[in-house]
Image 1 (tube, rainbow, N blue to C red):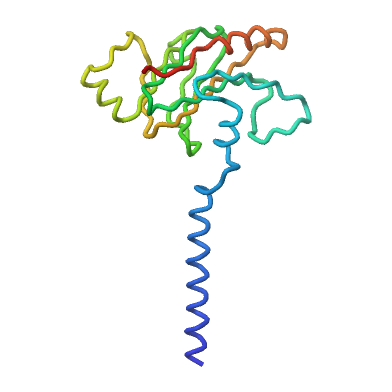
Image 2: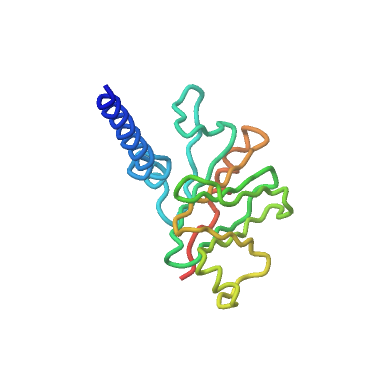
Length: 181
């Protein structure tokens, strides 16, 4: 009887370990996550403005249909990234995501930057070089450090009236997104 209980206990422990390993490794093996979806939508160093969502459309990323979204994907292994341009005076926000989908930096126009977005993205090695003054940067550049090389910048605009969406979309598409080589 005790031998049977040990076999059952061993099976439960082994099953639990297998279950735990599968659960912990599955996200790294997934290719249908948000990063891979956005990788297909947004080529490197290009601002892509997402299409408007119509009522009743699929919304797999949970986007707010009242906002306009601009995406910029950067690979910092080639050099620091720069995202800059002029945005409308209405509310806007910017968030920087790492490859795991975690927000590593976020701000809005209400932080004192007005209608100008001027952001530099650096990996840790580049930040060290920046501290040693080996990079020459413009005054007022917002410095963001990413722990890895893959980042996604999402700029959101909130047009105050539907008639302004086309103009806001054009301004969003005019943002510059590139790496310094």
